[in-house]
Length: 224
Image (cartoon, rainbow, N blue to C red; front, side):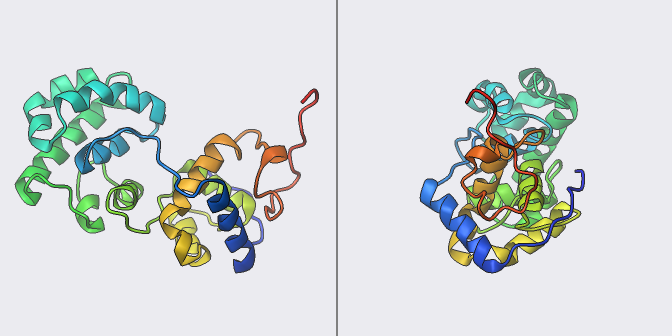
């Protein structure tokens, strides 16, 4: 993950104003991965590394119909899992991880996804970001999952400047008011995906431009 240009960190009052604005626009933001239970959410997030949510959803539609539980996933076997997700980047390695983590869930956790970061991070293909997504979305824990979008937005705006995802996560946990923590990472990810884009942020329609430290702001395109 590339380090963004360093900007001065926003104060808590500005950070609170930003999240209040996000909340005003969308009080209950949702992730864009399809899932039916904690296990399928975990698998979907593992598969989403270096892939789009749209692409993952297309691949997992049939996969989750056939294997909505760890036992069913193991029964499918690596070869069939591989075939079902072959449209996703790095699919061979991901298929092995999905199969292996399903086995471990059966052997060590009674076939259930544990609501515990350390236990999740011990699973194949599961890092801190994946664990945070599952803990946040399914178990309603106020975690912050730092993906490329959130990393970019946090650095550009000055919300949480940091050289690494962990740096950004650490600063955000101090910047985000407690009442907004549960939804904070969703707001920032969606903002980065649809407005604060990597190549050309759409500053002219940004709802938090008043507080953002990114310069120069992208002007309204000609003819719009």
